[in-house]
Length: 301
Image (cartoon, rainbow, N blue to C red; front, side, top):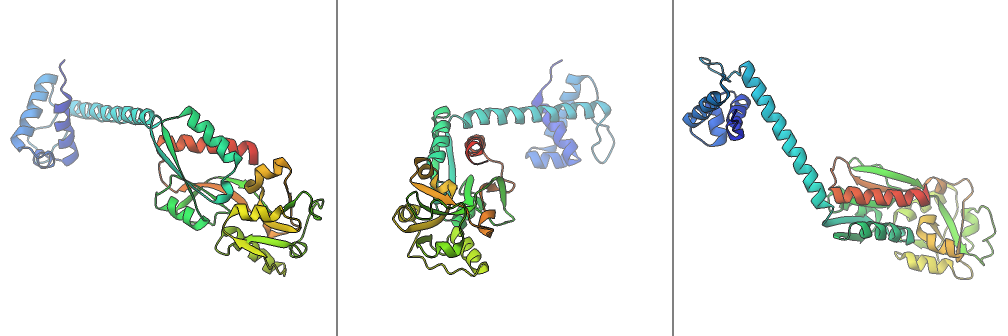
């Protein structure tokens, strides 16, 4: 049996539109052309596919089987196209990741290096910004993946993974407070404290905790630079407040010590990897997300 898929489309459109005239308008051909194609299809199949003498098109039993076959064929082609696009997508393309500066660490570098080694043709576009800007880029599809600290609940943001990351007092290993198991905000206020600027998410959380605990924090230095905050913490009487994820390298090297706060809301914070709710990520971005989660799971979970 000779079966023309192009003629099957005419029958499919008639079934979808309800009449030959409506199908012809949709396909931008003459009604006589539609009628002729379906008549030829019936000759090829040896059976009628449409009931004659009706105002609206009605498929015969054979017609329903043929249309179902055509729909299945479209689905298979769509699936094949998706698979091929996935394969091509993993060979090239760009994955954009927006993150807070606290994520820029040896851990991130290790996950990126592993990903680039497996997929050398994929470019990674890393944008470092504040939490609000990162979330805005994710919401507007300017970034495939966002990495933020203590993400507020937002209707357009989907948290893919959350890691408990308490905010802690950070001092040098030689600091007089370095041997303490726990610390209060009041104790930290006696140090030369460096804090992020007030528009940073971490600073918002610190100020809320200080207000709740009636502690007065008068930072000696404020900065939007994580490097400056860490350098201040390494000084003789310096200190800052950061999550461990921001100082992993310095903790492992023994340069800095992190001390949990006593019974504070600073202990309930977290680090999140987020995407836009409902967005279907390109396959390269999905694979990159897996790498990030895998490396962060091993280190932070």
